[in-house]
Figure 1 (cartoon, rainbow, N blue to C red):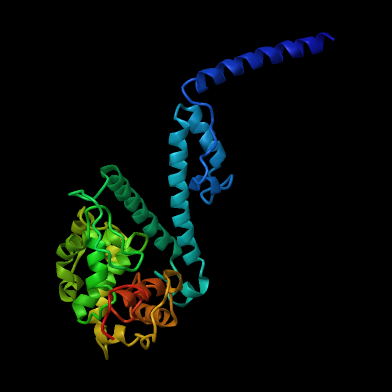
Figure 2: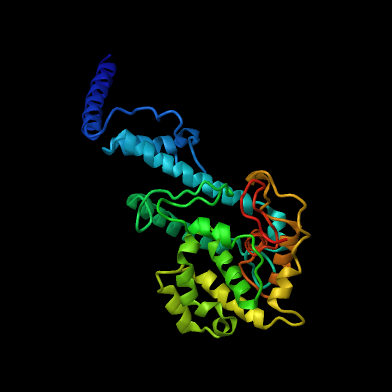
Length: 335
């Protein structure tokens, strides 16, 4: 009996201490409220793809004094980022694609998945930082309201308030035939830099890229050395990813090493016959085709880097090898 009474007393004391501690910790926070309906965070499982226990994370942050509304907002952003990462993971899980060509490869022809993942993760961090700055500012430099001319465009051509950069690219460049060694080399390099980022990020930096890479003059870039790489890594105007910078220089040298063909002829040799009709929805537009896979495989064989089937197809879209403007898009390109 004495043992039981002693146990009860100890438990009461321990309970009181825990209650006092919990009160002190939770005193700065609010009552844990449910996540508002419709919030993306509601779709998160108990443990997400990063291995973080989301429910415990929410509990901890509220306990530390953050308002539940702030925590739910942060979790919503986390959910959106995870959605984006899952999309990238799904792309990389297409094993056949990377066995045949690969976004990057080792000397023995195998896929250097760790290197590509590292490059994408590095650029994704930069993209999130840029997005956060843009969100905080509310618009691009100059600000202003969204500009609309009531023309129907492909759904991806959406600008931030006050900007027409994406719209102008869509209307005047994307899907129009492009020829010429240096012009195609520029697009090839920019598509590689875009891996893991939004194309809008690259467009905003395009002039800085041109200045940094001597206008993408193949002869000049092929001669870049260690000092140039250091200069590029210190250039805040471009995407400072060492592997991609090295790839641009290596690709310039690969262009000069082409035998029996030139870059223009080589790339356009993979252009498929023109479709008889445009796609009706963005969901019908492919990310990879047999032609882009063949292009990536041939470029890799010839020493090019960071040009897998997905990047190759993006290049084909951008340079008019295919017309992926949707059926209701106002832009008409020459057949």
